[in-house]
Image (cartoon, rainbow, N blue to C red; front, side, top):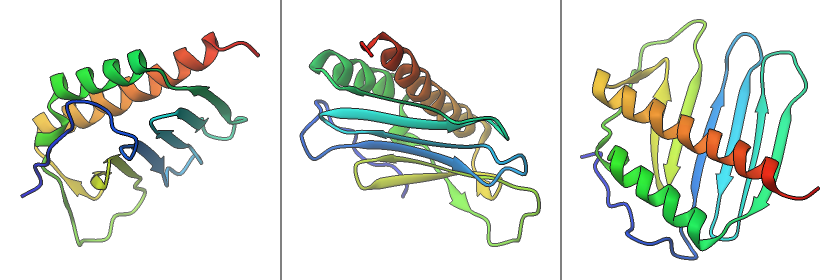
Length: 136
């Protein structure tokens, strides 16, 4: 039911997003990758947020899609628990109009948790590294 089709090539209307929030220490992350640009904000706890933005290239889009296909993000199965969770966090990873919920209240297999983690870690690291290479 959760499986979706990840495009072979990045079209103008395709975007990837990741968000993390709700941690007790105030940590949060927002990442948006569109055809033309990438922007991110990482707030590590009570410290000042780290932000960055850069233009996307065909090579960047191809590299991201290749990695997401290798990880098989389209096979992640996730359900949200209806039980209340104290001291939790929420995460969402979106590919086009298909969003996958993670975090404390998400129910996933260990395999799917690993894929989810590897996908958002790759995307966040990619954004940070490419943003630092852009001229100021």
